[in-house]
Length: 308
Image (cartoon, rainbow, N blue to C red; front, side):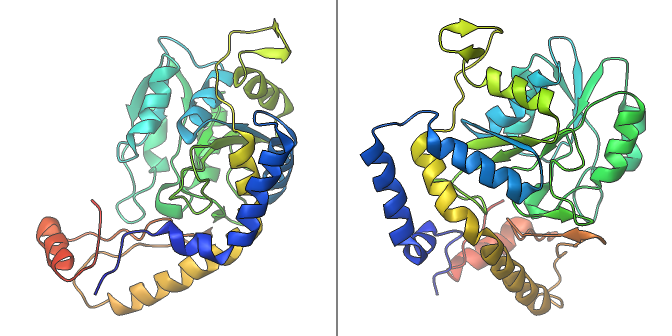
């Protein structure tokens, strides 16, 4: 038996003609940075997310970083997030000059415990970053309600939540902004690095748009200090070709997850929980076991790859 943790080659083979056509179109155009392919993908992805604006950037980390800067986060500030997220979430907060403050997660979903948020807020808190881990959205409605009562913006980390829903709403529809990653292993992945910030707030979208390209609104005219964080034309074209397949791929993930849930129910492991009102897209199927390392070794010996 050989069950790899992930194999993008199967996905490529499903849509190879579309991918090759997308790549050829960019090569034939001779335009590789911030052209029509980026505009086309931004429009399509905003529509998919149910928001007014999407801004393509260089990576998911940069999406979080630029979103925080756009919200006014800076040196000496605090940003609340969760401790079990990937390092880039805390890195993005640090890049903005702020200090990450951690609140614990719910024991069943492993997502931000909104009941603990209020106590973590201080006069230095300038943003809250709930992380939609493993393919499921946190209780973003309650988180936004608490944060906004204190005048604090919410930046959703949706880097693992492409297509996930909270009561019918997707990331960016409830929080002030949402940050996505298109790392190749994501549910919607590029064939290189890429990311996007989505929002319904035109002013915040404009700030991110400026920040991603050295702060220039017009070439060589820089209105603010910005960065070099641009989604390139090649990745935008590839993502545009892949986006129409995302919902079908997510349905397949959900179907496989149901098979795992049924088959492992009596296996003595703690299984993932889909909270009421959520649509889990199973970027990862995370299980817990008191003898974690021994279980991993047992699976490895039988050709089943896992990660911790």
